[in-house]
Image 1 (cartoon, helix red, strand yellow):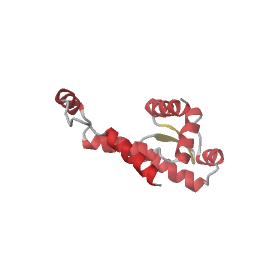
Image 2 (tube, helix red, strand yellow; image 1 turned 90 degrees about the horizontal axis):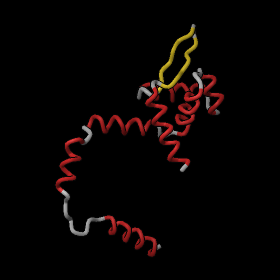
Image 3 (tube, helix red, strand yellow; image 1 turned 45 degrees about the vertical axis):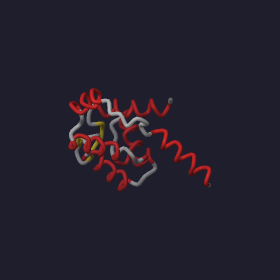
Image 4 (tube, helix red, strand yellow; image 1 turned 60 degrees about the vertical axis):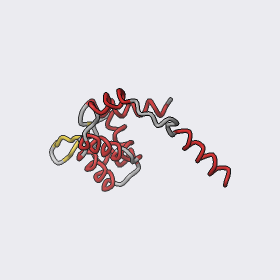
Length: 127
């Protein structure tokens, strides 16, 4: 156990700047374009929302077809109640939208950005 602790400490020490020298030009350049706290929180919330495997499966399914809650429940192996809860969270983050057809609601991705974000993440997983 002690060897593992020493290895972790050594890795941490290697990540620290040796000279404690700040590259002012780079720092200033990035600070000029840095995300606001609101935008960074909003983006973090999107990734947090996508941090659930059932919601990931829902997004994947909706990339392929517009589907209702009962379709999504069958696909994900979840209850309709659970899927409905997940869809509510996804709608709040503007990741999915729905259209009404009589008494039925059919869900789809909110826009092309959601599919693009998802595909980039999926490509990273397959590398």
